[in-house]
Length: 296
Image 1 (spheres, rainbow, N blue to C red):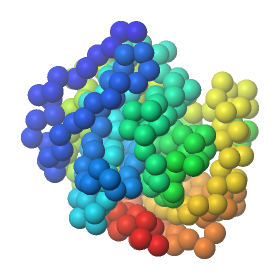
Image 2 (image 1 turned 30 degrees about the vertical axis):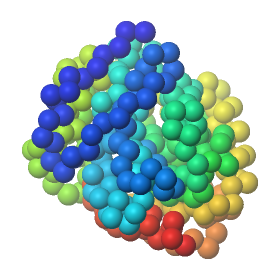
Image 3 (image 1 turned 90 degrees about the horizontal axis):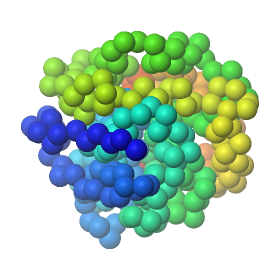
Image 4 (image 1 turned 120 degrees about the vertical axis):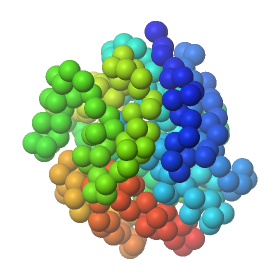
């Protein structure tokens, strides 16, 4: 597998990002970068980003979680952030991304009593890891994400995004994050989202992900998705649902979690004001809700 790694100087002096990177080996010689802050003996809060962002997305949530005494682990998906980037788009499969994150959580860091926060592809991957290893998770917060099986129609907004991702000549990472965020990002913040990708050859991961979402019942991932739902339908540990009010991609997706996941019963669900990347718009609010979830 031909791998690319972003030069470290691309990450110098990013606003609100003082965290030193850690590295773990996953798969066949892949390096996954991650943030690991706070007391090592505390139960971990696992923050999983989606596409095309990276762990920088959590810069407004990490400080209040640390102030509350929690350990925070925020990995960069393979193909994103400081992690290795397979140069061949076909090297990215849904099954591999789940396997890489499972290896990271279970074998490399051996995390237990995990509080999961997942959004976008962080949910498509993280909910699979949770469903296949439920004993390692104590609770979860699900935001602007889903676990599609291909048995239901996807929104037109998502299908348009999928077509765009596969055909546009230049994939404008920072501009796309800004376009799905209500607050106005600074030029430096937009540049921070562009930082992992010096040129188009580094973007095969972000380009691949939209096409990996199951949109037909015979998708290669559909059987594993259905099995994951069976597990989630038996998951009775606390699950808070926090879909934002301005996300055309996942709007209405919260209903399936309320209906099918028993752990959502009686929880303090809420609707943050924000776009698809609600961590940018409501980061401190989300962090406070996570702290309450753990405390309760």
